[in-house]
Image (cartoon, rainbow, N blue to C red; front, side, top):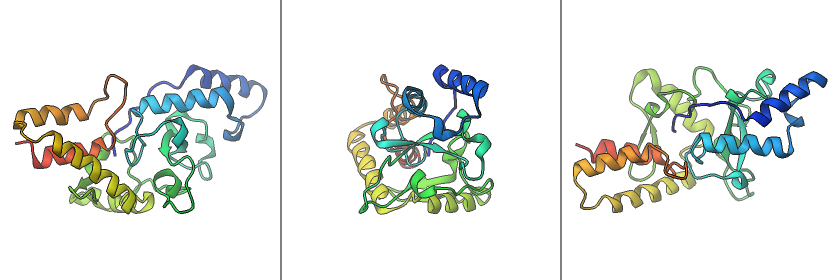
Length: 215
């Protein structure tokens, strides 16, 4: 999981809410068309085009708008930009296991949900070269990490395999590099590229590089 720093909501979204409130009380179901598309693009840019939870590459076509705090229990936050994220699995096939926002559904626990909006969210998790995601050993974070991994399905076979492929790719890339060069590569993975995109599964990649290869 990578920290998401929320920015300003898109102007079209802000204007739509203002106009709607002048005429009626808008709900999330009223949000559609160009305004919703603008909002979706804004969230994707903000996240560097990776899923807010698992870190896979996403675009408008394969992602959905996610409420961190679910509408069912936090209706007052349904149109709050600070509560909106972009998660993978816009539509899931019957044979495909659900994960991230789709699996999370209406679950939220103030104490046990690791939020990507928390600056230290990455510190709740560990990764293995096999692609497995594990909770940290830190006592004050472990319970939340365990619950979040379970509720979001972050360690299902599908995601584990995708992380392993990403990790294997970076391990091939560092073959023959010095420790200093690997450190620079790890630092680069923490930043978006020229297209404002983060490397898919950059959280897992960065963890592996820093914990196993950077002196």
